[in-house]
Amino acid sequence: MSINESVSQAGKFAWKWIKRILIFTLVLFIIWLCFMLFANYSEGVRTGYIVKISKKGYIFKTYEGELNFGFPQVNTIPGANLQNIWHFSVPDKSVAEQIEKSSELGQIVSLYYKQKYIKLFFIGDTEYFVYRVEPSSEMMTR
Image 1 (cartoon, one colour):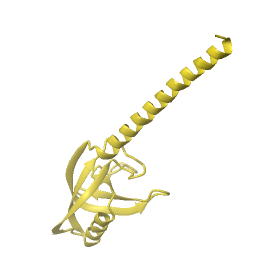
Image 2 (cartoon, rainbow, N blue to C red; image 1 turned 45 degrees about the horizontal axis):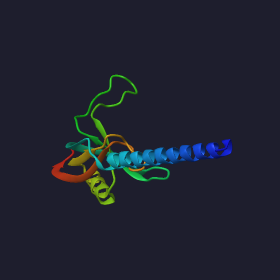
Image 3 (tube, rainbow, N blue to C red; image 1 turned 90 degrees about the vertical axis):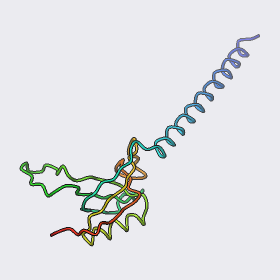
Image 4 (cartoon, helix red, strand yellow; image 1 turned 90 degrees about the horizontal axis):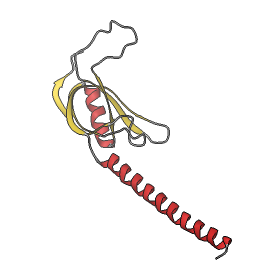
């Protein structure tokens, strides 16, 4: 066996293993991505007043909102965020429209959400995804 033949066989053997490793890595990535898309870390309900609902994004347009689930809070520190604002994403347009309508009417709403393990930029800006809204008959006092 000449040196060229052994180098050729070694190269074929190396490429065979490189292909296997790449395919294995791709399969692991697909499994991880499916888990992040479909698995939920937690589920729950938050109740309060809708502060904001908007559609935003450069390429991937998503519905993003804010819920005030507490009482009005006075900031003593200029520029500090209020602790009673909850940020959420809405993947379904009809649910976003229901939330917007409740916001316009000043209703208290209960938002049912699923929390993902991580936030995925192409489906929302947060890891909380609202899938159902139940408006209350109570109105916000202004």
